[in-house]
Length: 258
Ligand code: WAQ
Ligand code: MG
Image (cartoon, rainbow, N blue to C red; front, side, top):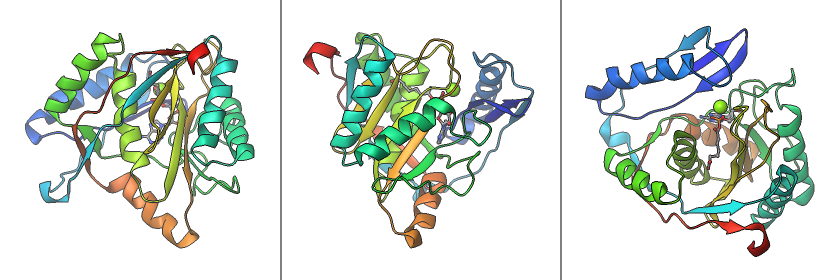
């Protein structure tokens, strides 16, 4: 589902569900587009496609680490160090933070999808700077979702932002040639984000932008030849990926201990 108002991106969401749940899930998507903190959608696109069960790839959810910072400035510093730790060039990590902060689309707003950035050179590789690359066709199995929600509830994290971001990040970091992902929300009242990689898991950062800020987005850092980029984008956008195992949800770490 993709919703917009006046050309501004409002909300997007992806699901992978058994066909008998299609009507309920489609209705949930419409509701979500109409009651979003970014505003009410004027245009809602829902696209549905059948997927052969044999095409599914299965995965295990990334472990979640919850890093509590005391300001968004501290959050961005932490994100930078985490990206460097994931082998992203320091200058490139700084550039990515600036792009998200300034609004990465050419009109200075949030993009609909993610930037693709070369981890060494900082070059932007996505073909369309407004749309970006949209990770799609990923979801949790019904069992994995139930299990995850009860684990998250213990830490006060059982909300749709966390569940959807963990799901998306798990698919994205398992894509060929992706080094790390960095994200903060475009919802004005949701201030958290994360750095994720296969090695470090999902490193949640509690505060990455000022309250009320609508500019947010995602960066997929890659180390790929030009020839393989097409394959990467096709995999991110089209490979069905069902997460049927849940990782660890760790207790919060505070700034002093990080
Ligand atoms: N593929 C690529 N990029 C996307 C996708 C997608 N499927 N969906 C959204 N984006 C981009 C787009 O630029 C949005 O503006 C931006 O990401 C943010 O999307 O507490 O809520 O759905 O652990 O606002 C992360 C922290 C919350 C969760 C992320 O993102 C937590 C969030 P949003
Ligand atoms: Mg949003």
